[in-house]
Length: 633
Image 1 (cartoon, rainbow, N blue to C red):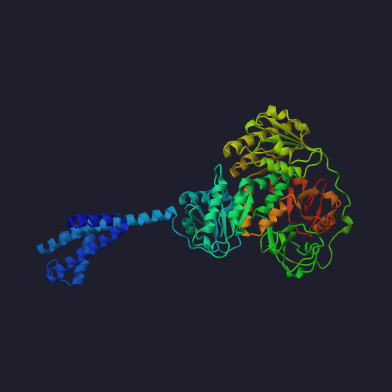
Image 2 (image 1 turned 120 degrees about the vertical axis):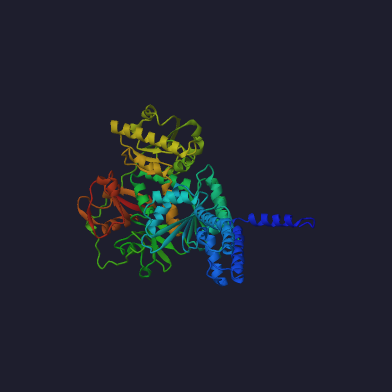
């Protein structure tokens, strides 16, 4: 400080510095000043032997207590006796009015400020073995709902959510959309996931898994990759690898994502995954119900278990040894999962089994003491040769090329694909036809699918499958879904009036619009971002499931198929699931459930889909009932 500064300047500078530090500094100095004032007056009363109300002097301790009470309650001085005592108490009262009152006011404001800071959600959480969700979108609500189901049998679990939104907003949304959290606590914090310092707020070093949510903007991948980079490169990173789950929307960002994430991130390729599910679902009615059943935590889902008693036994032997669980495949140690491996595969001591169960504590190993297979009921019918089919794709987005390519792996020779969309969103024909078999006809048209007259000109009487793609790259989510919904209503109306038989698979972008689509009373399935949320929740609970789902939803290897039951067993007679397992194994397939055609339009009966049935129960099947298998074709 300059030597020319006056004592007043120095005092004002000191006062300015202390005031600028906020209420904590003011409360400290006012508290000190209050104690000093009370101490001085108490010393005057005790040392000066001032009579208190004409009854004699008091000790310093008694005088201090008397002065403290007068500062807090000035209304008691009206009955004081003796002018010297009255003047002393008057000074104390003034201290109470100007200093103590200010001190109490600042203390109250400080507490309110602290409460407000806590409501903003910037305090660090002290949790261990919790799930961290970084970012915010409607997907968060689905993921939390699924994790609550997954942790239902756990005595205590925690989910920590951090995003740029206000803590109160996130808590209100969760409370409104997910009223029952069971044993799971959800803690919300406000912060920026791409800033390394903010990641410490949710204590990521002690988290069992981290889910990175894609933002709802035009280029979500950049923020997701940057967030993952911040997690893996922040100064306090733990030694053991993280378990991170994140989604990538654009194929061009795949390489960068793997470079950044290395082995600590399970990347979900949104475009490819949704395209594969749409393509496979349009070919097999009810398949998306099967997929959702296996991916959500309500009912049965996929688990990985190990049974040492099966070492040295074949895979075919293993699938009969779990009376309440369907076996899907194996997961070798440090190797990708294999669904539907060869039936004669010998299980090694490091092989784990991929099973479907109601929960991880509902996996029961019990070898059969005697065979329950009804060999006389196994059918020798073969699947009829495939015939050319007609596909109509209405709408277009970035997932379209992947879906066309996926269809090319499954459609019969001589099939026809027609794409009808707005001109500004239509793809180049050459980019699509190169991914299809040469025998497949591809036609691209310009038109508005919400116009019923345009739809009537698309030869719907000859159409076998209709795929409704969302205009997610052309319109905002709500407008794109409104366009899709209107098209769906027209399609069902045309089919109803003309008795047309075609399957419909509809893609919805916003999960909330799924209920609106259901009002059309269509038996089609709505494919949406919900599927991605389910996958993220599953993999966050078990990292090994990423390898299982990768093998299950790619053209290479085996996939889920829904095939006529009469190809496996005789219809009209009671048959147990052990027999269905044997019939499927003779075709090198793994059976995991069945579908009853009579219930295919009833949502209360899960559209007739039964995954992981009890193997000993007998069921009488009718014509056109289906067996759900994992097979190569």
